[in-house]
Length: 323
Image (cartoon, rainbow, N blue to C red; front, side, top):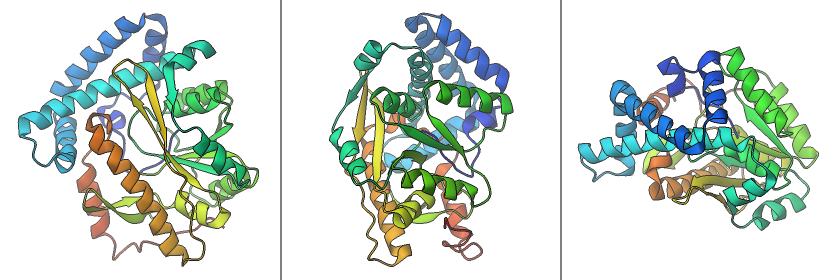
């Protein structure tokens, strides 16, 4: 499950999100035994923790809000744990693409599947929302395995080779990619798919330019993507938060939340804010439980403060809305 944000990812900043490195990583993980892949991932992430000083400081600064009583040393250790969790999640995602159904049965522990089923019974489509937390990339594998047809809304990768490889991965799972474009085409396409009772997945915890809504997140103002909540308002589709968390035994716990039904009796903007806040609260709860799975490899709170400072110049509801 992919989505947007107006801040480049840590991979882009580090200069490693390019076709050669991505293809090399996929090939190596596919060929090596799992334990060797984990060991290499641990080594690479440990080096990154030491060598990528600005990223490590950003991680620690982000986590300071989550763990306000932690010392600097504790935050640094938590930043290292975050690097290492991310490395394992990358390995697990790549390996999952070639797993048999029996292996995937063993990989996933799906709780409360009926929350997906109940939302789809309404016949208005389903919007699965998640954040940069846990192994969200595994969402496409999980949904395909459990028989939920899926469309993924994604920003194009800066490197066309990486973008093509990611599309190939989704295509191999029968997952459609809806690429975000700077026009109404994307919103209209999503609405059509929801009208066909499709399941659409979106990342919601980073805004994209003017497509944003203010929420309270860890007691601070933050800006989340507005489009999922607005699409729910316009289409009547429920939103289901979903988080995929690696457990100590190597399996992944899939946690779908209660469907968030948009109150269409409210003013549109009030309804959108209510839905966005419900998701932000659900995400905050999971991050408090597993802060090492929160993958924001850039100064998250600084970017949120900058967005708030621009509020007088870029109104919250500005920009084209899905029609």
